[in-house]
Length: 332
Image (cartoon, rainbow, N blue to C red; front, side, top):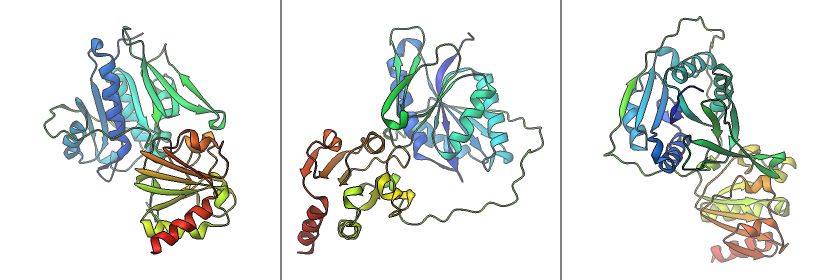
């Protein structure tokens, strides 16, 4: 096996704005590096784009020891071909031990192509990462992801090939504090793109985003099947408390809400300050998308509902009745 070193993080930026998941991964990579101090690993960020040199201070301040900048006009907009070509060149040039990528739409397109190009494995859609045997001479990643529809979790290792690659869901890790005094090395990577584009983009249309992005909401009231006939009450309480409304898959499957507000394994992972689960039983698929909320309040008629096992506060009762009472108290 070739000599490899350091934990690399792919920094995803759109229109020169870095996505929060990149900061989450930088913070987590620093925790992993701290566990293997004897290996003298660094956290190395890789950012692709055009006129992106101004982003390096922000990246270093959020935990990168080094930043590899791939700056070229052809990288201004995401291109599967060019991004895969350039990131693969970086991997082959620097031989990272691990490479972490956010499990965004872009990351899920890019990561498997790069892993195939550099002939290594990839664990997709992970929710937890760790290192095995802190005294070992290698930083073997333990990458955990949901399996069998979210009913089980599997931990996957990649002992024989490098880099160890994983895509990580947004909002499962915390963003570390920004350190404006941190100093890091900036490496300007020479981008060599000679191939003609295999796909030519003739127009780019921005998707119109309706409503609130639940992934960034700080206060969420989420409704499940038990609230199917009382969504109007939940909406009124959300308005009164300035909360964001979300739901379980059951509500989406019944056609009562759009998938954009679905929380869970097949929906969005959220990390609000407060999460109120109303009439949600707590299936593993749903819990996977909200268990990292700071404070969880569960309301359910079933005292044995799984949602209570992760709740900070539980109310055994009809969620619609509880919310109506809350609505009346707010009105007073």
